[in-house]
Image (tube, rainbow, N blue to C red; front, side, top):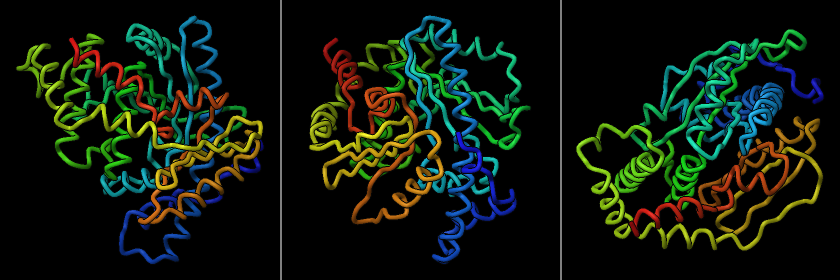
Length: 346
């Protein structure tokens, strides 16, 4: 990783001011452009910490023999701005999930094993907080284990105090999250942020609860008066009413073209362009993070109301792993559909 490409050139005060500008709808275009420059630099600096974290994570997972999928990403600008708007007291410099790493594991036993391993790891990084959204799921139905670290590196302190979020989840929990994001793309609402039509928010919350029965994890309080069979029956009714399976299967056929530049590298800029029915993937080497981050911000700022695209900069060892780790960018909800069909036919 070329350190010269990733040095933070803005102060914490400037970064926080940039966040305030981006969260303020009355900001001028000039103010927003300057704020986006600060955000872009701040975001790209997270590439080094998350890269070192994911290398450590893979080593630990390899020692356990657990089958896994690991990916990392830099948080999308629209998601950052939406979070700043939702939480008005939040400072951009203290946002904990700009740099994110995800481990997707087969079972809850595997998740528990890795969570325990990290709790006992004795890393030099400071644990900022833990959120167990599996034992205490969100009302939306979201389930995942989060550990936020404040990065510390005695050899290279340039990135000290940046936050890195580690997410550990099962394949089924990942399938649920993918379906939420995919449906949100097509109805043009951020369902993952609990924004959008109540019928869809309620449906995914309900399905999350059904999946919890499958994995023997805690239910939401709002469904505590239902039996397992009653939850499954309600899933059947609501899925039929909303035509969920038909819609998701149709979405998977939308993408007519996946365009790659055939370059070697592990950084991938993924652009989902539903209007033009294509996914475009541009690949960079790890040392080209400055170029990749600049292209990332350029793609994001070119999005308009008439041509809404989804863009993300992620790291993955192969395009196959990329597709498995970020199936929502390929409108791939096969795992969710398969499990939903099993519930419906029980």
